[in-house]
Image (tube, rainbow, N blue to C red; front, side, top):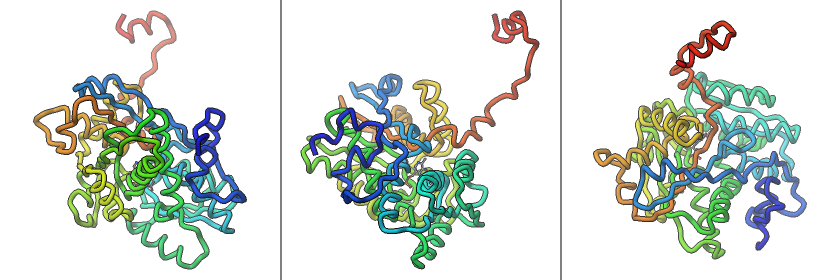
Length: 366
Ligand code: F0G
């Protein structure tokens, strides 16, 4: 396992980088778009806000081939599906899973069916699924309804389900935790991430635990998950029938990996927290303007939590007592350009001016 992170393997996709950990047979086809190896970015402004000699990093999963962390799981799920002779893929999605499934299906030449909640998918993600040639079905229901239907259709054996209820997805997504440990030579003290269907928090925890068992890290992080206040079933400990949030990626009321997420939180002495839509939008703007990292609203949820914890009048219990000199990693899960509608609303309409230096000088206030 010694050579799992050699430089020559970087950029070749998560299967080639971490094959020994992914239990792929030597004969399995590798369907990759060069996912993974995403930047772990030190954030000086966030670090300054937190103080206490801490260090804050952002793991920018928006830098994956389809702009979200889903690609890590999809390469493994689609490769294994192909090995087993799959003839079609199917998924429910709030947008990113469908974009990723459609791309990897396109590379294999097998069809991909995506079931989406009508009018609740960010424009960029819908455009991606369409561009990659998926068969798109919009339903009058939410993500939880879509996943219920996908589970039924999967029972027929005609399709391989590539949602995170497929363990191959979780296996692939563990590689983000491996990368973090490889890059900073140990696990962080805190791992923050947004929670929707709860597959990713489950995968990260499994990844950290495995790497720890292989003595690649000396410690395990506290896993802190963030849900949007209107879609926070784990936080409130009840199914939310009609989840609502502007962070459409995590608009989920009955997460499939609920139990596994609770186990990850309990075992790691972590926590689940909520943030309001208002805080999410503010954090999305703040991160873009202070660190140069533009993420989609769901991805701003952990940043919102971190920023709130710096304000002593606010209550983010899990982050109130971050010990001195902690290393904190926030995973931002999807690229900002996938879901630009909120930002577009903030923009004033641009009016053109005459093409002269004088006019341009005046326009920029010189
Ligand atoms: N962030 C983004 C950008 C997502 O797209 C998702 C989930 C999450 C966070 C939450 O991850 O579900 O593993 O807890 N998106 C799924 C989808 C549901 O269909 O694209 P999770």
